[in-house]
Amino acid sequence: MLSLQEVITDIEESKKKRDAAGMMSDINKDIYKKMTDGHFEAVLTGIGDEKCLIPEEVFPFYLYRGQNEEFIPCVPSLYRGKATEPDIFLNRMRLVEFKHLLDSYPIVDGFFKKNHFVVDVEGLAQHYGLKTSVLDLTRNLDIAIFFAVCKYNSNTDSYEYFNDNEPHTGIIYVFDPIFDNEPIPNNDTDIYNGNIRPIGLQPFRRPAAQKGFSVHIKKGNSIKCYIYKFTFTCKDSKRYYDMFDQGNRLWIKDELVDKAKAISIEKDFSFKTFNEAYFHFKPKGFSKKKLMKQLKEDGIIFGSRATQVRFSLEEKENIITRWNKSSGKEFADSIVRKPSFDHEGVDKYGAFKGIKNRKDFRNLHMISFGYNLLLIASPDKPIDSEWVNYMNTPAPKKNSKEHGEMVPAHCTNLFGKTYLTEEDWKIK
Image (cartoon, rainbow, N blue to C red; front, side, top):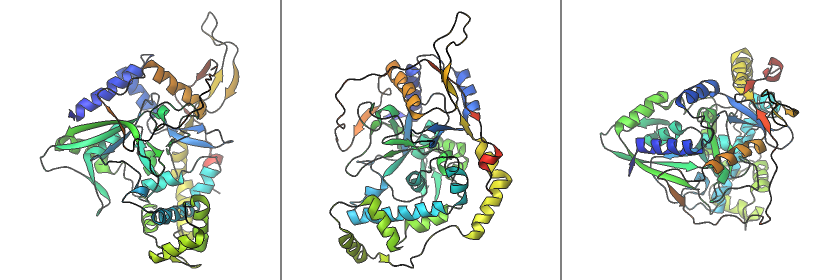
């Protein structure tokens, strides 16, 4: 079995193989980290003006997931423990309640919706302890290693390092985003618009701190990616524990924690919540009457006066005051965009000619081009990794018609630039 350092070395060497332009020198990496750390790029999703806020990085080669041990199969919490359809629906009702909680948070309407930024309800729910159909991923290898070498204590809702002076084993999963949790590249949809999606910057900071992405998995499926099984020492565990301030930099405690926890164990729902969940997540083989009967037998209560977890008027006023005073500007200053334009090449002096189609934002389609170039540079798997497909599910059928796309010459800013004004972020 590999050591932790050997895994890190293998992944770094695999990334270098994809660096066809030779830009991943140590000096360049330090510059890129300094220029991008803590920034999130606003990227058009392809739905009108809607934008997702993706952790900015110049070389986004892989996504990662760290675990203390290997679970076979590796599935989202929604499906674990032989969950029945009523069990799954119960947690879907909790997700609906969580959405309404987010809607009561003034930053959602006052900033995110105002600026057409995506609020990833299920991604946030996953990060705050609800059972969902997604698994957390991260763009940062060190963050994945933290979750592989430090253990969660449910009693204290915090992470601890191993200190028993014994050797331990951990798991790192490596996802190639262009594969989209499948065994072959997915060219039928833009990157980050299928099974794998960015969570990124959200109204609450925990996903942003973890440079969060998610992989959405349907019932009966599991992850399809590369795996490293490795050994680590208690010294390794302590080093990563301290690297992230005893886990506090990643496992942020904020005003959402207690409210999300209350929803995660809720058993009292309104008929409105039931109907909304049934509309969006109708379980196979269950009419409304049959489903409600089963849920009542399982101890679930329905009524028009069901408890609703929301932000109070006083909480909202305090949140807006704090936002307008300081946190709003800090939040807005972490959001950047990368303008671009098409061109017809360069002249003999090295200047662009035929500049056209100027764009203020990149879109997911443009990012897909970059990932395809990385794959062309090196289609090989990460060095010494193994492929896993726990459920042995086949790749989905693709359109067999061969097609290509002419990609125009274009230029994009290497680093993003802030662009939001006080009018954009201030809540009136």
